[in-house]
Length: 255
Image 1: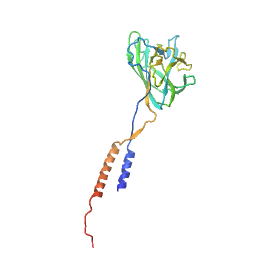
Image 2: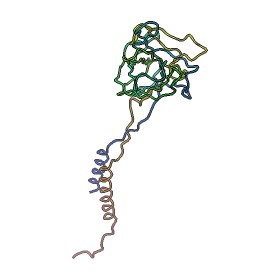
Image 3: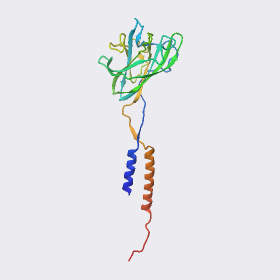
């Protein structure tokens, strides 16, 4: 009987669902703190597939690099942008986001992933001929193994030729690398060059990349059915213990 109870208890634990312990990890954080509330003194890099910078309908893009020390499943990128308008042309705006390897020249290399993204935008400041926004892109998880990567972002709103610019931010001294890359003729980028020519100013892009560890430990935890089964089994076990410890009745030996 005791062996049967033990087996039933083991089955209950094995059938109980495992509840994962979710941990948020930040791969890079170059957002200024506090976030800007006015256009004055801001530096930016145009990143737009169709705008009138330099010549009509010119494509430009930008990317920043970061170091992944532990494999992670990335599902969110936050970045800051602005327009030379009182308000953004659209709400939400449309963007292309790409993860790239780091090539031998420390520039963006081959494409790792270009996820389908959903954009949410929050105004930071508007009016007086300029508007700034906090953009948050969410997407299905993209796994990045340890190594150096680039994140490329450019606006793709074809309804306007107004240029969108990616604001600059402070260097993440742990996971960032000083400088960013641009392609002044293509979007997506193909002919990259490194921009780190303003040592006295911020010369990194304002971006924050978050996700979860690629391998999430699961702690076995009893669900509702497991708890119910365990309660029944504990009751049965208690009866077994009571019966086994009950003193035997003394009877005179039969003749």
